[in-house]
Length: 200
Image (cartoon, rainbow, N blue to C red; front, side, top):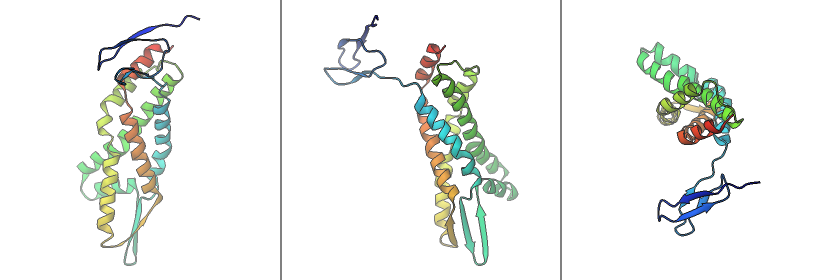
């Protein structure tokens, strides 16, 4: 079996070195800077996308919190908040919340599953350009983390006026926001296209 030798150059000190082990992290022996990084088969991104998809619907439908004011008990989830915005005359705010916290995260997760799933199986996705465009252009519009922070601020203010009961939706929403944050930050165009061109 013929082993391909790759010539590498350290960007920090300029040391030239040979690498006989493909797809392996190589550090410069002189300054210890990473010269060549091992690339995984996008399984990390795929796992994040699948986990986010499994958390998405419980995060949307389960009650986030319930608050009791006197004898009245009000329970709310993500869809209740959206309904409140539209019924209360805050249509523009409702559209922004729907786009950034409900529609965009779901579209992003689905595109990630299809693209990373195909690349992980060493296949070229049929709609690769569309998936890549969705993941590239919508990264800054996935704002679940901002929504979670706003919910926590609202809870602090509500506790001064009523008894607040945390629902399972707040846990699922927090986990979903964390998974989306990791998924968005794991996006690497160079790694994706390298994997795509090496796929069958």
